[in-house]
Length: 135
Image (cartoon, rainbow, N blue to C red; front, side, top):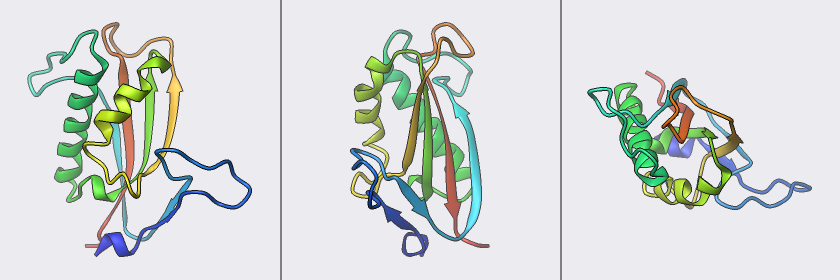
């Protein structure tokens, strides 16, 4: 089982303690890289204009579908990278993220505030790295 192959090191010695993410996640398996997911529904329509929670829910739903297509789930995610247009959205985005991940062993994470994304109404984009079971 993959979760036995993952090692979470939330707070290595000498590193400021984390809150809501793990500093280091390692493991063995097939690496899957999920491209930045945006708040577009299956028809390509933007979901949640002006609403970071609605956009986050669509982003994580899209990511869940991508992970499933590769044979995985959020249990396999070892790293998330967030690109947000306003850092003030982060708590609301993370609250939605917590509906999808195991909050006791969260993935490693990076958050970057950007001036703009692909389209003006997009508030966030999230990509992921996952370790899947060996075939």
